[in-house]
Length: 78
Image (cartoon, rainbow, N blue to C red; front, side):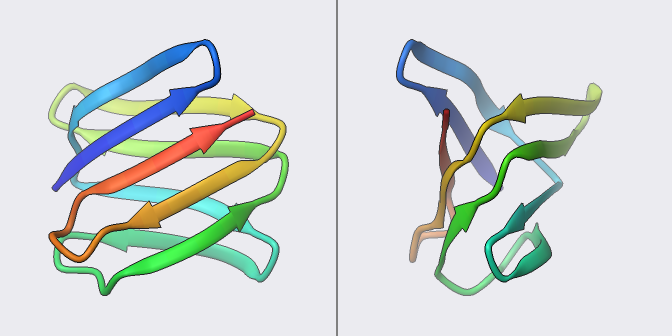
């Protein structure tokens, strides 16, 4: 799936991901290929992506994550 991770200062990651894991105000979750459209408010912590190049971790103070109907995942982190 395609993932795009941003901060107000600019992009952190744009590319393919196999799995995305984070924690929302409702608890921990993972996103895999084919996930249903989804919106989550993230709590401070780590957003983790599994990619062909390995695991990538992004520390943040909160933010939002969307799984769009076409399967792309976008997140804006603070």
